[in-house]
Length: 294
Image (cartoon, rainbow, N blue to C red; front, top):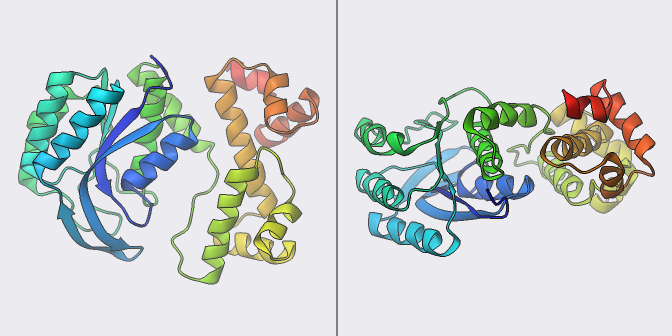
């Protein structure tokens, strides 16, 4: 399959960015995929929970899906929030007609705060109309932070789009998620805001800068203060978080590309292949070549 072909996500909007279409686009893009979207529901929500839903009419959802499929021809479709029976019917009809190679669904009946997202009648329609079209149905899980199921299904979608088989993609996705750095926090205070800004900066610059002082300067705070914030919120030093992000990228390049170590070292700002190998062995306990071969 063509890894540059768009992955279509059909789901709701989550204004906090912790789940929904916003998280799908961010996570798929972070893994090197191309995301396209069709929105099924708009939520009124914040980090305290969902206050209200506005479910888009089935005709609007259908038009969004058909517009993307006719133009971009995605072969991997990721399904999320489907709250209306007529929307379920419309999506099932379109997918039955166009038959993308892979359809992924991770049922989540409740939000992270316990709000019911689907009625029993809607889920019955999903079981009857959607599940038979799926090549991957991920087990619904309530444990874990907000958006955990979204992340897993997004990684699986990217790997399927690269040509992996479903069982292989699921196993590989769990391994990649285990190597990802800590996630964003849902905090309204200054510390939480600064912590999230730090993670944003790491995401922008990790392949060029690995020193804490650079990030502290970007955020206009001292290195000791940044360390206090990250240790209080994540239990990790800023340096550990930076190194985790770099390590996650090395793991991704080792497992999803055939780049030689010299090229990976160059892409991530290491002075040499030997420097990369020393760093990786300190983080993972084995050499990059051993990791690639396991």
